[in-house]
Length: 357
Image 1 (cartoon, rainbow, N blue to C red):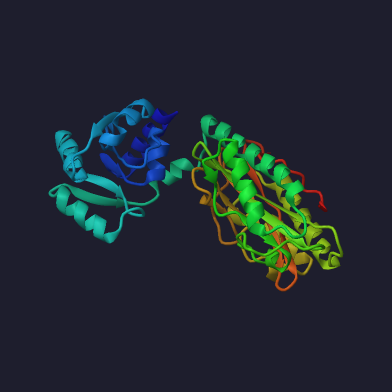
Image 2 (tube, rainbow, N blue to C red):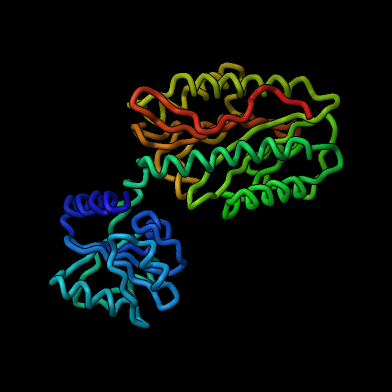
């Protein structure tokens, strides 16, 4: 699979009239090579694929980066890059302009002279949008782990437990099941804090008769899952909170039923937004309906009212409408889906029935 990615990258380079590309992004390095070490550079030419790393990783890189020539780079990395480019008589190379600072670009340019650096944006990220069978298998396992984590945490939810304690229990569980970590800072937002779309776990104690939003995911074998569920604690729950839960669920289920390939991100976003707005809560849904998911928790392909991205088979995106009422509380429900030839496949399967714990 990795070799297919390099072939596609070479094709993309040809479309940019480039004979070589220097990859500095750690995420893109892993995507292309499978190498999981913390230091390295990828150099792709018309005929060769190089992984440059230091002494610490030579054995690991050779084992993981199948199809790549592994090179131990000099103390000044660009010396080795220059030697390799010169050996192929290449006078310019593309570089990832979104990953390189102005200061680093200046240093690279000086070290590589007279070889010229050509800025390129998103060339590998565009390839990453489409997940192959190997990636989808890992992402399904990451989604399964998120589902298992949600099931695990439900018995721990009770008045008096803190949001941070719940967060920590979830983190421990995911790691015990093989995750490197959570995909991002876990959101555990209870009571009025559930009206905060990004209310990461705090010292607040859970109370009776309130909503708790859990937004979390597992980083497993390099890939992220992203799941959100909102539950209620036993007690006198404000009727409006149950009302907005039902509206968000209706909007999310409607989107899952109607999202299909060929649809724009704007059209997919409208599937949830129009329903929420029709119930008078349009101003309380201030974020997008979804985003791409993969090696990073936020990737290309946006389901938003400003997105012209076209949904195509192989893309993995989230569907996560929400309603947030300041001073009262909020609800978000999220699943991960794969766009297929005829519709979608849902990766996450935790219950979305209104749950009181």
